[in-house]
Image: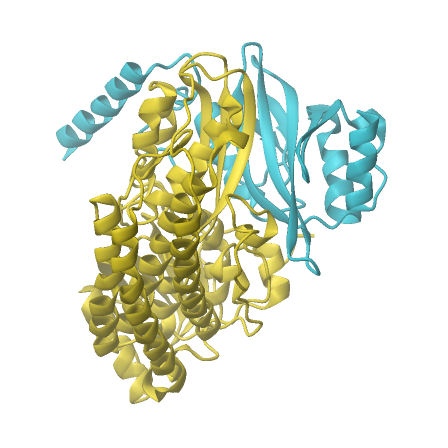
Length: 418
Length: 173
């Protein structure tokens, strides 16, 4: 069944598994923001075309799962957001839901606490998506868009900071509810800011769909068909750009996502433009949801925190949430003491790597920066690329900017990359 | 068990032979835990993949119990018309601790490849018929017999091993 496909992650250190018809091998990485993302990409090319791409991971194993087994359930509430630098709230959200469920207080959580949790997750989705398409524009050689979008991203960052005290790690949630309330005056301050942000994001969408210089870099590039997507099991926006209409918020609603009004975004084209549009539309949806949540908060009252006993009864529970990058899965096993027996975290990027490598097959080397960016890896930078000429043994090391610049030139003036 | 089995069969629209299943728990509405053994896991997965058409494997978890290992496949049954997913956690139980072996599911899911290698790395569970069962995440210099997520290795011990590797690397350089 999987004969025509094999999973990647198979490069041997001596390079003996390179496809025979490739003439150059390009190495990208490794990086280390968190576990799954620090990756070393190996791209085998023939001329200007990619023959096959592979990956090696594991450069920054931090052992969070092992660390969690040595701390109490309550201490872990503050360890778990550190799993990811940018989607910290969503990791914490799943964790507190696992603990709520295992402790049996799931039904006692008030609507107000749930709404505040949801606000935190949606605000995070907005700033994560804006960050991503800014960097995508930068990779495609459109730096104006990077600066414009990151300038506008400050609006939502200011709101998060106002509500939680932190810019990227709000840490608002606790097992049993939330730590802080969102008072009315803060909500009133945020509403006009969200209106302003919506206008800005609509402008960003206009740029991505109408501006030819960026659209040409994304359209019909790195197409992942629905059949391929089903085999390589991507999740989140990567899957939704290829016509797999699954979003955990709709597929298996948690918190109050089934109570508020929002639309599922998906596109069938499967190229990089489609995944970009999925994220742009989702940003608009999330802004709309944030406004609804703030409106609902006015009329909803309730306890913010219910007591959860430190000892969690025996049991196991798997819970998922839609992180900005896709489906995030946690699986907790409790043994009746105050520490977890086992806690498994699967962050979305690992599941998306296979699909992204599949996208690269047969594409131009000049499109690599854009395709690598497409699944929103947390790579802070694709810092260094080494190109080895097999015949002469010559090694050239170029940094990310140089790589992007060469790629842009090759694409724009139809020149050769090397 | 039979009521939950009927409900799951209704959702998946297949017949699941009772002899392949140890137990079924309904966690909540539309979320099931299915328990099976290493002997029957392959056959059961074949029915789930080929007859029921489950194509999404979210991840694979390894769990160490007192006398056995468990390997859990987190599957999602996707109903595209309703944009809905039914999570099914397939537990392969009774994996012997002395000689941990369980069938690999690479034949059904491409993604099982690297998830299983992760379990092999951290727990030392051997997946039979896996085409490329090699180290995925742990560092190259990590000792082969140390499986860091097993309970026998404490936090302090793991720290020591990590420091040793770092020291050795520095000396070599």
